[in-house]
Image (cartoon, rainbow over all chains, first blue to last red; front, side, top):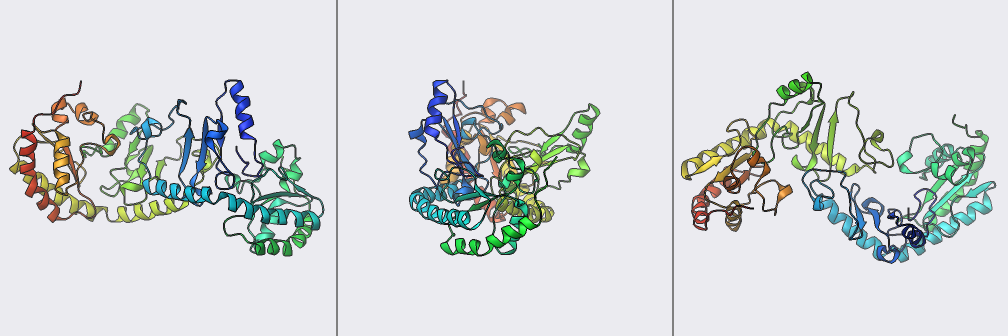
Length: 241
Length: 241
């Protein structure tokens, strides 16, 4: 992944590609989270393949692109009409493709200003959470992360409890990736990073986007300290067997 | 296929399913062309699986559904987030799904009246072509076909020549499936039906849809006889090696 969808850490893709190529290994990067937030130059990295998606750049859902170097041979998964030079059969979703292209063009052209704006909001939130809330752990790299991503473990809390209490105040966060929404399992990303299960389940992701403002940071900080206290009193998270 | 996308022939799916099940064979039907034009009752046929698509019922492109019996085990082709109970990973395209559902509901509720209307237009076109144009072969079953599909071989003509000449008169047809548009190969469907290569390449599909009217049939018949004569004079189709 160019940037992780949960904790927001940005990987040194160009360096990793270099190592992979030393060992004659083909390298694909999931850049879905990165495009529009970071400068993503497929050619500069020497990547062999890269995936991007419409719904993360303000475009339609259900559309994405696999960018590949010209000399990479692909094995089709979907067979039939032979569209897209036999790589992916199926009637092309022309309106979605056009929407995806327009959204990507806009997102990429605005990515530098957008990154600066979201980064400033995120840094403010991170600083204020670390100052005002005890026993908090920032997950992911402090600097080298998606500009709009702030991911914390609030020790002694259950992430789901924080999620519900914030939702009741009109603040929407998430406890993990959208893929695993509703699944009461600790994040595989946090466990792989060495967090224990209780800390993993005590985590919450704040994401800033196109419509976010400094007022939103103020709104979070007005209610979060009390919500964390309340969640702590509700008891420590149960550990799944 | 419940109904063929080129020549429009409707298959006796319930009978075929019965035979397949006698031999313990799982049966899937591509019903993309049938839904909205014919009465498609998944349960009445005892089918194991069936595919339908949004763009053939007036809904969005890029969305479809695989309908399966509850006891069929599926092997996923796409892996990742585990959406759709692990059968097809990927962020769900919610707007497309909603559009597909709305379009399908409308198309299915109107399918009987729509079939009657399109069938009448098609029968009129078929009758007038057979009366007015010599050396013409109707491909596919004369009665048991998609209501809006009229597929002919115009002997002595090249299908592409007819296509261009009709296009110049504002009449849009096709020489095969959209999947193979621009590919100068005779239709595999017609060859499989026993047509020789020259006859297969002399074919043209007329399709009626939601906006078609009797005036459209008149418009075709005003120009088609002269166009066929002109295409014949342009020479017989070349046979691909």
